[in-house]
Length: 312
Image (cartoon, rainbow, N blue to C red; front, top):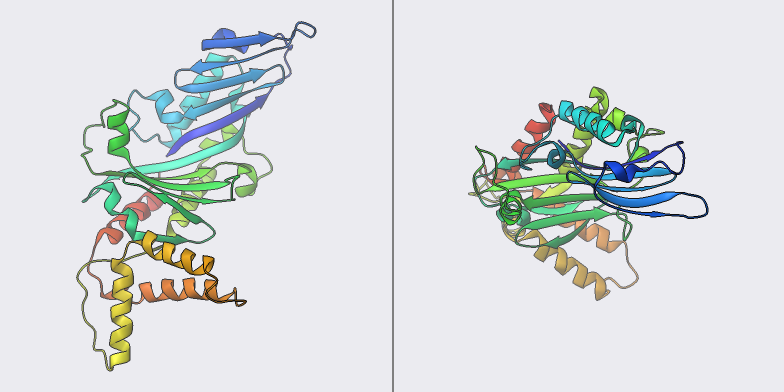
């Protein structure tokens, strides 16, 4: 499930140690006074940057190991990739620090990927950002994004890159990724997160659980046929209708209305009311979940939870 990583290794060899000799398409420079070399290049799909003090390697584990990027790497594959990087660079990359980590999975779905985006609403601590025909993104940390959750059309990505999907995948392929963009070790509660740790079973399972927990933190809409409960009175019926309409409306539309209300300062000095409004919308949306038939949200929930329960 580990996809893109960024590894940084500080080394103690001579500043004239030339990593560039092991790279594809190397571009290097030298400080004529100190003899220190620095430069960049590629290693298969990996981007490599180096100087006299260390090296940074960034790229997709799946793309590094496999010709087809629709194959999902398992824990053992990550170990293989790190071992190959060490051999090819002649450096102990197992000791490299992990400064970016992406975890992702994709599935065949009943409907096209973008049919699921409108059902994914607000997320705890995240801002729901751009929703396009192919991608939905959440981020936290402001301009310096610390975490990103992204859902996208994997089939279209493969088509655009000219790489066919593996056998067994159709046209409706949805991918969900969690990206730890900075302060990765702190987010996992460890002093140092090394490349060798990525294949540790306990760490790997904790990463997959975090991936699942981030998904669960997203509030969702539930659409389908609704079983009508005994209403009792008109007020209950009005509330029920309002809840159904919230679920039927695209999440982005409701969030845009909330933002417009906040920008218009509709609550005056009572700024706390915006949080109350959001909680009210979330609670109202959830009221009809138990009355909705099995739908697209349930399908995606089941896919994610199955991965968490049976990760490899």
